[in-house]
Length: 147
Length: 147
Length: 79
Length: 79
Image (tube, rainbow over all chains, first blue to last red; front, side, top):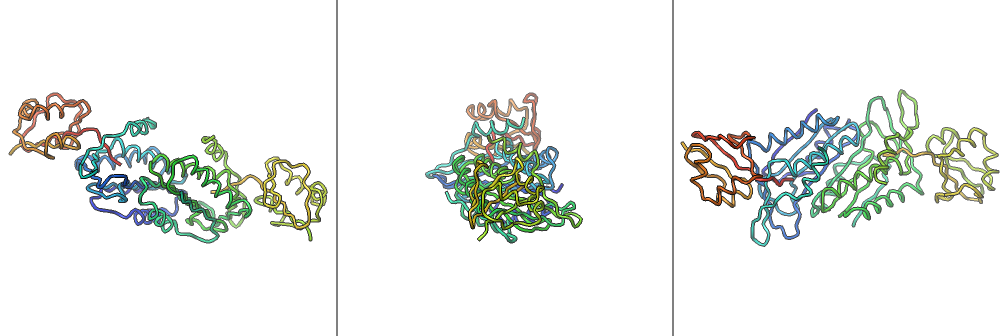
């Protein structure tokens, strides 16, 4: 299985990334995807920090784990770091598989683990003030579904 | 909520449709999608028949149901009819929502219901012979998860 | 002007065509004019009907008027 | 050449910087040279550590050599 895992420090175009993924997997029965974007609602800027020795290797391990857990034809995991404005893409995950449920589950699983078990720290600027975001209790609940 | 529900009798470009959906929903926290494609493996052609008085209205009702069941910013349901070759897109579903789980669930639900409760009949040509496809038992299992 | 039967999915194979014109009348009478094998297939337990584009819950008492359309809908297989 | 402490997430605020050079030595000694509030934050139960980029399971017995990097990783919040 080919997996494409990247940590990006500049804005990316999810539609172009997904178009390439579609083109590479036209033989797959189904392709599920999830795009996460910066929400407005008072957020002026979002910043994602990472720890280089761990973050990308952890994302690669996650892709590997999905691959071993489900029958996949390919997997895409893109994650931004740095500062982003509302509306900007943060994360794009896609999975191609012979069967729909496999593709769905892999994307769902990868998102739950990116949220609560990957090496990212998020802060946002509201009314000119930066504040670190603590993980939400339901992020843990979500990831525990897979245990 | 804006929903875009279409029955298409000619090939469509899922990457373009999704690019438009992304552009229309840059304010949403998350956008989940699923693309179903014709698999090869001996299938020469796939044909989807529908019954015009019921099929599109049924798809619209499904979008409405998703809308009432989850908090969504927008929903896209595209479904092909007619003959398709391996690799061609059959169905594209996408949901934009403030929260990830809502977007996921809406796409998952819509796909399960398109598979087992929408007015489509599928046949495929293998080795020159057309054969109608019966629904698979696990399509029913899938849809019963939501009951 | 006749009434029309519409056959979806595998019922099209059973009928040998996608639709057929029939003389108006009660459904039982109409079915009596068809090949017995086809009539049996159309009355299968999992086959639903739509009268002029509206799904019908009860099979009893259907009468086809001139210009009516009755569609026979076997189990679906979409997506 | 000194050793280096790296502070992630909210620990960066607690430290007032993203990283800091310290004299090599056992971790307890190194922490003793920091502001007490910062030392307490770094030893928080949910803070993990990576020594030269490798997560460590046990906190005991860490000794920083010259050029070493010790990262303090509070609970993550990605995606």
